[in-house]
Length: 216
Image 1 (cartoon, rainbow, N blue to C red):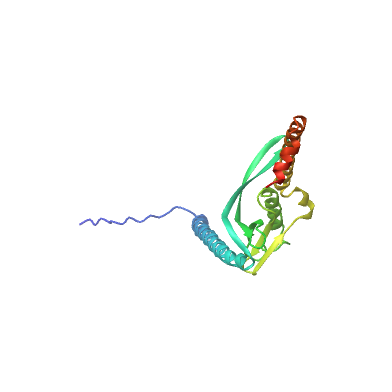
Image 2: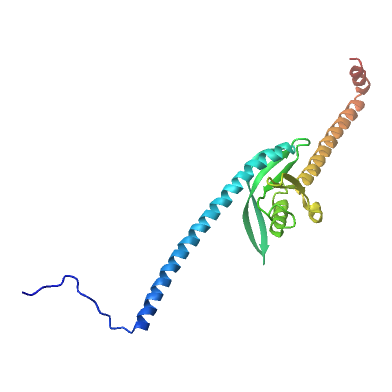
């Protein structure tokens, strides 16, 4: 009676060294895949942790700025910044954390919230450059920038003396325009009054008009 085997045996005709190398490579590929998955998960966890930390920092910043005398006007305040490169104009969108108003004088400021070990400090180059960019980009609606560090409990008003003459140009030009228009209106009114007086004087009615004026 003949017996049939249901599990045939495979006898690889490979040298042991080559077989070991193949198994080693397969194991290395498997371990590399696990490492990639672990790193990807770690990056996602780190991004979520930073997002939660930033969100908590912004909530603490509102209370901190309120104690320092500022009230929030707008959150995630949008803006734009134009750069000319080789004659071509580039416009970049910006989004500051807060637009705030100082209660004691009504002045507006752009507030940027920073958390972590280095970002809340002015010695940190990227933070300095961002505040400088905001000072220029929002100069038509804010007179300065605030560096808010909720984890340090600090609200710092930052100004750049080198660009002080460039800040709030819209307010300066607007004031001059108002003064100019006021002068034009006053001059026109004075000219009309003088012309009316001359007309009354020619007709001999100036004295009676003055008498009526002071009789009330």
